[in-house]
Length: 566
Image 1 (cartoon, one colour):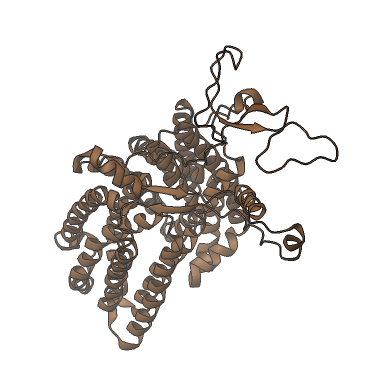
Image 2 (tube, one colour):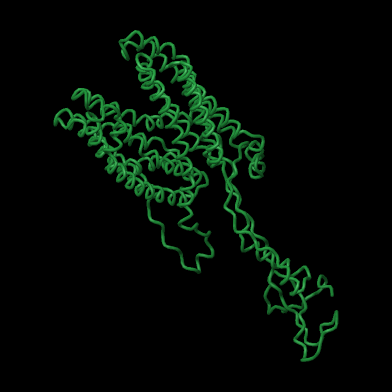
């Protein structure tokens, strides 16, 4: 009855140490027609060894939170990343400087043509956001295989998506050109369509280059994308000089120069990723005898699903583009000096916005390491446990048949949790970095619009409008970088519901305010007042969403790692 005091004679297990397990008496099979009485084992009872009861599976230990970057490290990453965001503006300036000397009509057509060509890749921008987020998390955990899977999958999706976008843009080049050129379509649409068609051929290279840059940024490497951008700019400059100035190809030559420079940048970036082993094919699966000792590989479609999970960011980009287009249309309806002043202000603002956009790269490179996925117990294990509990509750088979237990729910998708308490020191450094950049940007804009106002416009009325709007423009630029950085916090949390709700509120409120500006006659000051509201509202809503009291509660992993980190 009591096995705790049982002493086994030497050699009971053939001279071997007894394996771990539980000991029990199992009776031999009774004769036909006989039954054992309670507490009796009968003759022939044998001592047997039961296998050890397996312990329930434990979740893998979470790595400690990464160390916060210094302000110098944040700037060392941010400064090269600025060149990445400034690249489209730089390319447009290079093309415009050569086309403007060749033909006024072609220069007028270059504006809508460049807008079409630069806007189309926005539909696949979620691939870059996903690549940065997932690669950053993989590098933080030291999982090179996961980073390689994300890089390969994102590049393949970018190439395929870019090819489809390119084909669609090529087919719709004439229609889009007529829409964008408006009243001047008869003169400008053929020139615009020619430029758009040539640039459409290079759209796969544009998307793949953007994804490759995102993979590098996910590994906290901003210098390689900066070198690729510099190479593209130099090739574009040389191509414009040869094709536009020397061969006289005009707007078509500018398009070919830009397309070839983008192909060269793609080749450079893919070569770098290949040398780092991020594009190497996945090795074949190990034989079954070795596979049991290795961690299971995620299904191939799991990486695709993880990347496509960032598709909701397309909605965010649509709201942003619509906001700028509505402001431009409202300013254009003012006519005269206000409309001209808005064009000049936006030329400066777009350059300054690109510097503030680096906050998104900072957040995506440093914050996903604080996110973790909570996996619910598998449905199969839950069902097994439920069956065991049903058998143990003493119900007869008839009762179980009449009143069956509810089937186990299907396995739920993993939920993303974000340790805001552990991430706060890092986020604080990122906000300090973007605040410093915003201060420099405001000073640059003020200098250009005051001391350099005469170089922008010779019309006194236009310069007066620019000076009147300058305080509102400074307020917009000073909060833009903070808004983009806090947006990156929600992206690191994969809080797409929060992003969608925020931008829905922002879009509806801005549309209502712009309608009020038209009716009230607030003029250009009203338009830029909406820009201030656009940035401030995002800061408030993003901060409220990301810094709720639940977000400041540390996870158990961070609480355990806190004493070790000192």
